[in-house]
Length: 244
Image (tube, rainbow, N blue to C red):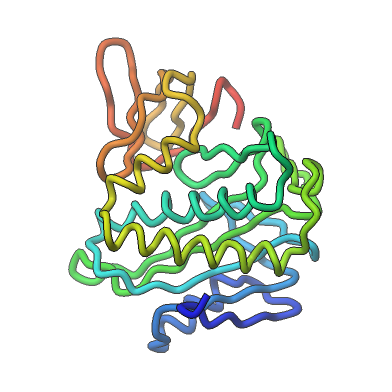
């Protein structure tokens, strides 16, 4: 926890927007912003993220020495940290499952999500903000999405404690990444994901395909088995077995 300078607020429009504002003003890495409630939280692909009191709304600021292409591994790393923090407060048998690129599921229902904001400068990352939303006490209704919360699976933990658990896990996995590189992060993520061979569908504005999950590339891209070939997917919405 010593790496993180945690600031806690009763309410913010968006913890990520607060981190971004501070990053642009020159804030050193290690800032962590937690809000008991968000009024204008952001999800992936322009969606809103509903974050009532009792859930985790947390964003952290990093200044990694990585290229834009290399920085995608940090989304996987954050997913591992969230899954481990959730697992720590869940009873045995309620294991979180990672879904590429930024979801954490329990029993096929989304309980947490990640959002990455970054500022590239000459193909390098000047700063990177990881936004983390975790349904701890409540599972907001999201049209077309199956959601759940940690409390529904037996977790007895308050949102601030879960957020601190995430920060501790982030510290651990950032150290692992620094010492061992991206291959270890890819392997650790894959161990916590749905099995290789799971039927998936990829949807994006420029690409749609159905196939099977074939793991991740060394840079953390999704590998999709389609007929007799493997395709690398760097962005898109993933549906598992026809479900989001």
